[in-house]
Length: 181
Image 1: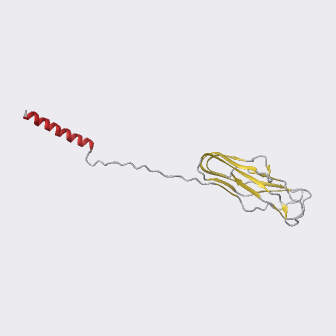
Image 2: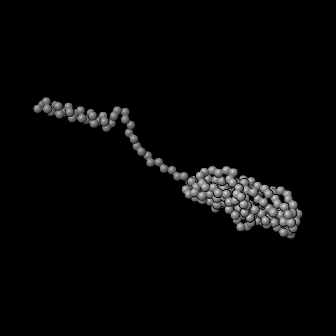
Image 3: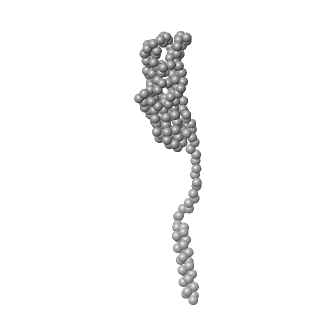
């Protein structure tokens, strides 16, 4: 009986040693999880265009053709599946030398292909082959759809002003406005 108790005690002690060794091996590290969060903030839509452009000098019954320079539409909203449309509109070109002269209102706008894009979206030019008449009624210059996060597109639009045969000599000024929504 004493032998049986000693054997049982030895067996119980061995079981404790094995259990302790399996449960907490020597040098084992303990772990603690930390749930970590952060926020990615969204921005806004923005558009930039050259402040001024001289289309050059031309004669009555002729045309003036020039590229305006880089126009860039930027979307920093950080959205999934968002879209935007850039538009262009123009005022009449008025003669600042002879204010009584008739304004020139016949102009076209062609966005052409993008000179650069960033991010992921489907970018579409408003015009590639056929220019659009530009006036106070805006035309689509560029658009993006199905965007993933931030993106941008840059293009260098071509403007053609048709000078009527009855145009009075002088300096003409108008404004081409790009907007983004």
